[in-house]
Every structure is written in C-alpha cells, then in structure tokens.
Image 1 (tube, rainbow, N blue to C red):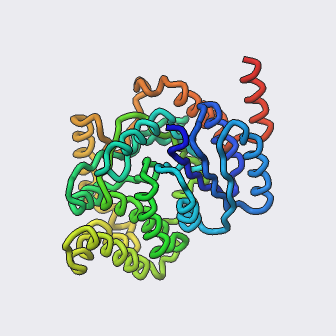
Image 2: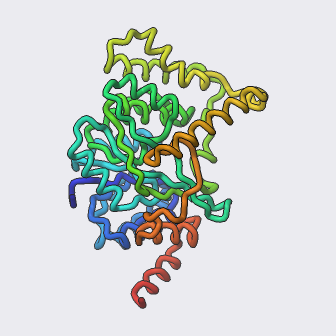
Image 3: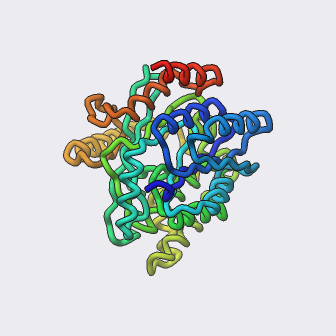
Length: 352
C-alpha cells in the first residue's frame, strides 16, 4: 500500500515532540507520505525545518507552513492531499503501522464505511506511566440517523481513523466553514465525529492502533471546552444549526426534528455546567449506573470499548516491536526529544 496513504500531522511550537515522532516513524520504516502542516513561530519553524531535513532521506515528508488555527490549517492541508487515504496523527502521538495498514485495507474494500480505527490508548505520565484504553466501537447501522443516535449516546473520537481522503474532506469543511474552534473547541470535536458517522459506517478493530500521551501540554487540559462563555448559547446555536443541516441532508427529517435530535445529545452544552448539579446524589448515581452498564457490555463484547479502562499488559499487541518502541520513547522522553537526545539514540542504535 506504499504511496496510497498520507499521514497528516499538524504541529505548533513543539519541536521536541516532532523530533520524537519522526524518529519513531523512521524506526518503524514508514513508507507512506507524510504531510506536516506547521504553524510554529519563526524560531521553532526554523528548528522544525532542520528536523525534517535530518529525516528527509529516510521518510517521504512534505513540510508546509500555515499561519492558520488548527481547524482551517488541517482543512487546507487535507485539500492538497493526493493519495486515496488519509490518517490524522498528532505530533505527540504514535500510530502502529500494522494497525493503520489493516484499517486501510478494510476501508479500501468496504465502500459503505466512512472510516476504520483500532484501539486507542492513553499513557498517563502523572500516573506512573499507566496506560488506559479509551472508548471506541463499530457502528454498523445502515441508517445514518441510527448511527447518529449510537454516537450521541456514547461519543468517541474518530480523529485518528483511516479515511478515504474524499470522505474526510466533508467533516473538516463543515467544521471550518461553520464553527469557531478558538471560542469553543468542544463543538468542532463533536462535529467531526458526528459528520463522519452520517457519511458511513465506522469499523473498530480490537487491535492497538495508537499511543497518545496525556501531559501538561495537551490541548484538552490547556484549552477550555468553551473559551467564550459569554456567548456559549450563540456558539451552541451555530453548532446546532450546522449539525441539523447535515442530518437533514441524509434523511427526510425536518429542521425542527433535526434540531431536537441534536439537543437530545448536545443540548447540555448550551449552558455552562453547574458544579453543584454534578455533585447531586441522583446525578452521581446515574453516572455510576451508566459506567457499570458499559463495563458489563465491554465484558461481554471484547471487540468494543464503551468506557475508559486500564490496558491489560498481557495484550499480545503489547509485545510488538512498534508498541515497545512507542512506549519506551514516551516514558523516556515525556516532553519530546532534544537534538542531543536524538543524537544519543541514533548513536546507540548504530552501536547495537
């Protein structure tokens, strides 16, 4: 499948993470195209160019600069991709090559599916490097509205899935045209996933697909879900209208009914959450029962993950060379690799 898939990697002022990622991709013999879209400041941009030059003889990298925010810069980069398939990869994450190839092969032969992904794993630096599996499951319903219900009832991110490039274009175009990520990042996250399931089925493989790092620079920790709280209701209204239109485009649903359906799952985000409400015994009990129900479902269906759980270290995928390398690099270089650390790794590899 060489030359038929592009890794789209957005980066911003994180040269250490980029250096670590490209080292991993080199060591796992990545032969796919890599499109690195970079919005870094001048000094970091210059450093990133040096990093790319260092790996350019062994990796097929196209490094482009874009001063835009993450949503428009990814949309812009995606529009320049000329391979049939695309997979997104954050600069501080690792994707397992064999799992990516498995998903690509499936999508290539399954036209009714919009995307495919495997098991997503988070490594927590603050918890002695313990790993947790995050939610993900197949959505096989033929009706797009039924798929919308499934995703809304137990949301998970399809960001890292392997897509046909032409399919992936639609979620990013709608999100960029209609939503404001800087004022409220939560709504673009919901939009990208929900439009994906409206376009086709989702395939989930119980194979380790990626390893992401939970650290103090994660966007989910640094950037609030809604930065512009004064206009939260307006931002939600825009999201509601845009997602309703996508629902109406794949069904005979009226605008009124589509809006109600969006409200059913996301209306809670129209107003700022009340901390006191979340502490109520009734609410805490409901969350507890829901978590137990998901755990029971997971116990019966091993091919799905409904709620976050510890990764079993006896998982056979944890013995692969790619996984061992990914885990070691994250543990040993939790804030990325410096130039000296990369040189040390390279020298050690040559000596071995």
